[in-house]
Amino acid sequence: MRARDMQMILDRYLEAVRQLDADDATALMAENVSVEDPVGGPPGTHVVGREAVRSFFRKGFERSRPHPRRTGPIRTTHGQEAAMPFLLELDLNGVRSELDVIDVVAFNEAGEIKSLRAFWDLRSARAIPSESKTP
Image (cartoon, rainbow, N blue to C red; front, side, top):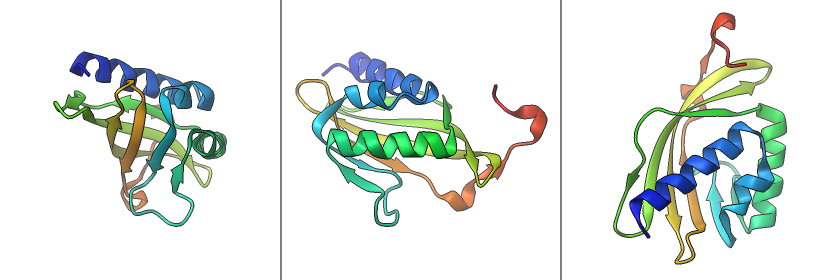
């Protein structure tokens, strides 16, 4: 898989998340996808299977209203994997906040996401001043 293809898929994934569209986000994933969001998180944050991930995303999108924005280039490997840094703006207990995230993603031969591991720590979330909020 070419680096350009992995980058385009991950940009489409972030756009689906920005649009709060769990269907479009999971359409990029393999049927047996594994998502850890966050890596090492509590029970229920490691989800396997496209339908289970779709449900997980829908609940998360409804609860936190995420709005990701890339903060650096997507880095790829020759081994069909990529890492993507981004800033995630989201609602945390009624407070609009931001969180630094790095997603590490592996692709299958068909170009679908087979594994997505989200590295973030809620303790590093920062409240966003009212005048800075994304529309």
